[in-house]
Image (cartoon, rainbow, N blue to C red; front, side, top):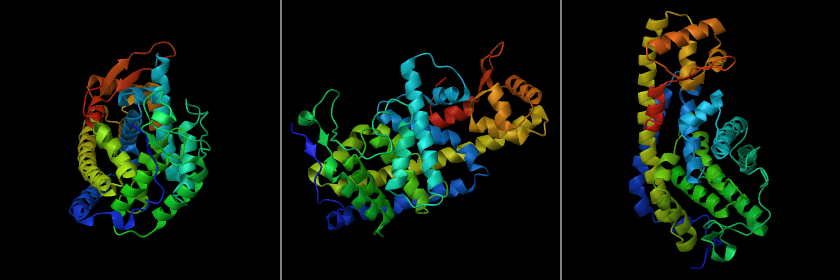
Length: 371
């Protein structure tokens, strides 16, 4: 079968969208996002409570690209646990870069609009020091690329993006459309995501950067008050439909079918995100009372925040993150282990720090028990 090629002149779709098929989905999707935003408003310390969710989104977005690690492995590595297998360690480093790229983009968006420049800086962070570091990080590609099975050539690829000679103009048109007023912002976001993936502007990392743009757009356009929207769980679970929907835009000009899929994804994931945040808040309140009763320490709030920020934690890192003196931190960890709030993963020894697990939070976020 011949590859599908990028088709010039189909972006933006303008009057080729069948709004009669989209309108029934617009209200439910927007309402679900609004309810999710209401749950975000109830979070007293979003930087802390949402931190594990950003790690999960980075993990699932990377998993779509075949980069695999559990949330527990990622957080453990971040806390200082060693990973033996080089392949696993490389995967974890790429996932952590995905998370860092998102943070860098958020920082840039404090003072600038979402733009190609922000995308390039996020891409630079994504590939910094990992396996893709030789694939022009932070630069638009200057050669052709294609999507297909491992070992495929451009002749037998599944999809061939826009030529490198037209890429800069394509990205300029993409950015102009992003700044335009649109009949519906969620449909605009669906179109932007599909076009970005169709352009495939980088030699590596296109999928991860494209999915990163979804929460950034929702945040900058005022849909959500924090730049956290975990979309990749839905897309990873329906990977074949996701890729088929994107391909159908270039092959069949089926923007409407793609937008329907995207709106359904936004609604379903907004509802799931809201449920998780509510359960995290409940868990936070319950654990706060337990920790206060067990430790009777003035450091309860700082200790609790450190545990929720890093549910796989090392003893040294815990003291530093919580800002608690070492001896006091060790006592708190011992008490929380005895009270079965935390589990001891590694007893350490010598100069090696101990490692602990706050299982309820990890289980809540992943939906499975990964330890």
